[in-house]
Image (cartoon, rainbow, N blue to C red; front, side, top):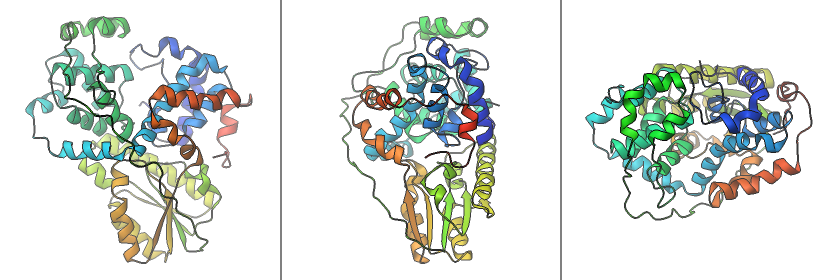
Length: 416
């Protein structure tokens, strides 16, 4: 398994990676069996079993910044994509709507069944479907082949990745596919070239997949029509105040599974529920293995929440969020339900209906954000490296103390 779905396992895997983090810049592009040169922590970071800041702090306690800057930079690409999309939510809406308007394409099904006719692509499909993971370089090659060689809709490729990737993220996945297709950075596409595969594929993989390399010999870009730069349409998220009430319940969802390490960690709650977004799982046809991984991660979050607040945490992974939350809130006579604010994506799309259902029952929904997210969100008004130059000053100016990563991350009062 790429990563066991628990916070403890993620912290353990982080500890194992720290000794080789200084080699990441040199080795990260090499696609090897088992992926020993990368952390494989992306599923944990995507669902916030652990947070970007925790990962960066742990690595910096063991290495000087200049040795691990590339690794920390890559960790924060995901937060950049999330921040970028939060400022431009229409890009997500356009993707969602265009995906819904696509007609069924038999070729898409063939590729998804590892019947593309190209051994390289079929190998990547088999790994993705079998493990829920794919090395980032392989993702780029695959997406470039899908868009520019197979000439399939990038939206259906993004949906395929989102369905199977354990770290499938509405922001980073969608925007990365837009980038490959030449839509994210107007005028720039990404092409997978044979020389690049021959350089970075492990020798044993290169030998077994050699018959598929010809398809990458002379790639030709499928250029999109004139692309307008998406404008910023929402600079600020609405701020909601949490009122003091003994009838306050905590809702934990799969977008943020370490709520005890957030501003809500110091609040008191009379009841807790942890839910899976099963309507989204059904809509995107998540496979059984991914559903089970998410269910186990949610169970881990429920266990930790119960320990933190010393009350049982209910786990619901059968009913849709609307039904589960309203029934739970009514049964516990709640006046308000509090949760972390989900980023742009399917769960965020469901909030208006969810809020209305709770309001009809006389229950208020209050959403809160992590201060670190709010602080850097506006950094994403431009490109990534502009974002990074503003963010890196934090790491240079405030290096973490040289202490054990595990000792500082496991206590319940880890700073938010």
